[in-house]
Amino acid sequence: MNQYVTGAVIKELREKNKMTQLQLAEKLGVSDKTVSKWETAKGYPDITLLEPIADTFSVSVTELISGNTVFNANVSANMMRSKFYVCPVCGNVIHSMGEAVITCHGVYLSPAVAEETDESHMIFIERVEDEFYVRIDHDMTKQHYISFIAAASSDRMQMVKLYPEGNVDARFKINGVKKLYFYCNRDGLFYINVVKGIDDKENAYDDTGKRKELERAADILFGQ
Image (tube, rainbow, N blue to C red; front, top):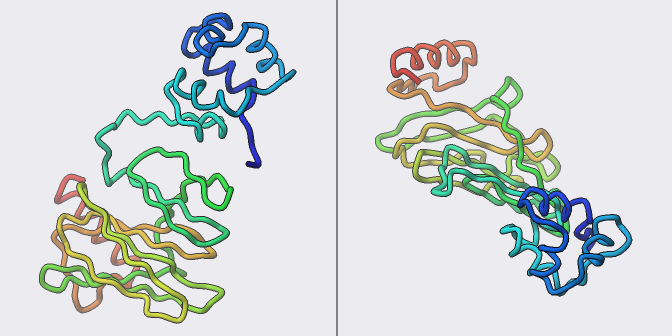
C-alpha cells in the first residue's frame, strides 16, 4: 500500500458528518485523545479500524485512503455520464456509469477527459442497415494505436477492444447510439456526437467542416 488514510481526511469527514471527536471515538471504541492524535498527524489509525471508520462515514475504504469522496446523485446511473479509466501501466480499461474511485496496479486513476475528434483523429461513420460501421484513420503500431471504440446510448454501452497491428474499425447496433468514444494510447480519449437522421454513406464523416455543419443542422432539427 503506497498511501494511507490521513488525519486531515478523517477530520474533514468527521466535521462533514457533524460529529465530535468524542462521538467518533465512541463509535470506534477508542479514546477521543486517539482521534485527536490522528487529526494532528501524531499517529495513524490501526489498519483494523479502516473498515469501521469507512462505515461510520458511509464511504468505501478506497475513498477513505484516497481522500476522494464519491458523490453520485444519480444512483440509478446513466450511460451518457459514462467515464473511462485507462491504466498507464497495463492499458486496462475500466468503464463506470458515474463517479467512482478506481485503482489499477497501485495507481489511482483519474477519468480520461474526452476531446472532440480532430484532424489527426478522423472517424468515419456509415449506417449499414441496423448498424453503424465505424472506421478511424489512424496508425496501429505497437507504439501508437487506438485501444478501444465504444458506442453510448442512454441505456447501454457497446465496446470493441482493439490491438496494435490490427484493424481500426468496429460495428455497433444503432439502438439509440448518441455518442462514440475512442482512445488513442498517446493522445487520450476522443468523442463524436452521432448525427441523428443523417445517413451519408458515400462520404461518411471524412470532411470535418461538412460534418460540423450537418451536426449543427441536426441539433436544430432534433432539438439537441
